[in-house]
Amino acid sequence: MIALAAIMMMCLGLGALFHGWAGDNEVQAAGITIHEQIVVKPGDTLWSISEQRVEKGEDVRIYIQKLKKLNSLTSSALQAGQVLQLP
Image (cartoon, rainbow, N blue to C red):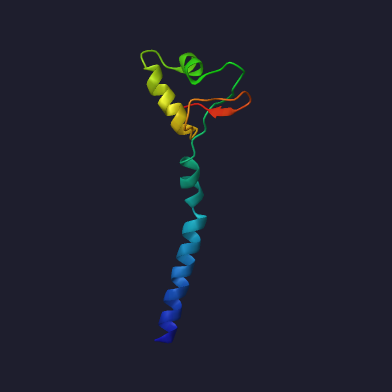
């Protein structure tokens, strides 16, 4: 009985090891999204940045909301040198 329990524990351990080794990293890597980044220049505003980047037909205000959410911005104030990720 003890030998059976030991074999079961060894199988579970090896299963966990092989699961982690055989592709778990591929799943994690696939979930990473890389965004284009810009550096804010003096005089830049969320509106001016968004106007330049918005796709045709998309509302600039919606793009600004995405930009603020992606960069965890709580206000519209920007500072020169600040790095923003673009949606």
